Amino acid sequence: DTGSAAAIPVNPNYDIAYVTPVSIGTPPQTLHLDFDTGSSDLWVFSSHLPASQIRGQTIYVPANSSTAKLLADHTWSITYGDGSASRGNVYVDNFTVGGLTVENQAVQCALQVSTSFTRESNIDGLVGLGFSTLNTVVPKSQLTFFDNAKPHMDEPVFTADLKWKSEGTYDFGFIDEKKYTGKITYVPVNTSPGYWTFTSSGYAVGSGNFSATSIVGIADTGTSLVYLPPSILTAYYRQVEGATSSRTYGGYVFPCNSKLPSFTFGIGEARITIPSSYISYAPVTAGSSTCFGGLQSSSSLGINIWGDVALKAAFVVFHGGNPPTIGWAKK
Ligand SMILES: Cc1nn(C)c(C)c1CC(=O)Nc1ccccn1
Image (tube, rainbow, N blue to C red; front, side, top):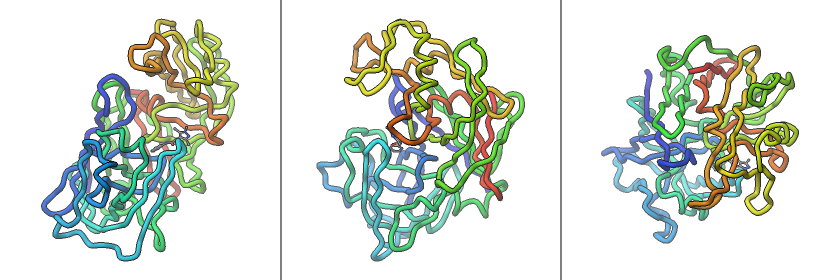
């Protein structure tokens, strides 16, 4: 089996996140979910939520699905690195992404979501594509959509082709040669942390020299920005007129009309360059002439994160073989 589905920016002006249409249950209920390689819970806004926590999101109503079955006495609760959180109960139901169906997929129904999820009216939930060891369902943890689908797939892979301010795709079970140029460079993945953790071979700022240095980080489609060690940030923002690390805004900001260098990172011998336009992320507040950077420091996170700002500069293959690997190509 294979599947292919759109990755649609939730906001026309800034790539805060991307959502993908999925069908759940019988008759199918269509929700738009944030596919997130940085977590492993598949959860949705549901009919169990208080109305006060719903602001335009589409909810999943298990009572309206003839194939929904409550997973009795199972609950879940997740807190993300940015402090957002949700919790609830669990059903299994049919789950279809771009023509690829998994029967008896665990669909975690939210009974409570934090304010940042309520505020994002275009995200109806998340599809965790990390390793199933991270799933929070108790007493029995559940498998991700990818783990459930893998045995039925032509190849045990999914690919991310995210785009700057436009619609990209997630493909499941095949690698579309038309979506990238040159070759795909695969590097090892350390599955122990439960994320797609890999080591980048270094970086360069603009047209500067490449600095060969191992950067251990995660490929995270569910995080907007790139978070790297402070020394790399200093090297980058030193080149940006008027850039400063702002306590007010919680990161590097600069005048929106500043000229920004590109940022290149290494994957083995290969190089992926993030264009400067991806790094001028957004005005700190609507209409401000101060912009928030797409590259930020990971010093307070304890983990380096290659989020959407980096991923959309490449075609990325999440290969779920034995052992799993991650592949990067230019496009
Ligand atoms: C670890 C971390 N610290 N900080 C500041 C961020 C943004 C992260 C990553 C993170 O929280 N990602 C996320 C959030 C919600 C849903 C899915 N993924």
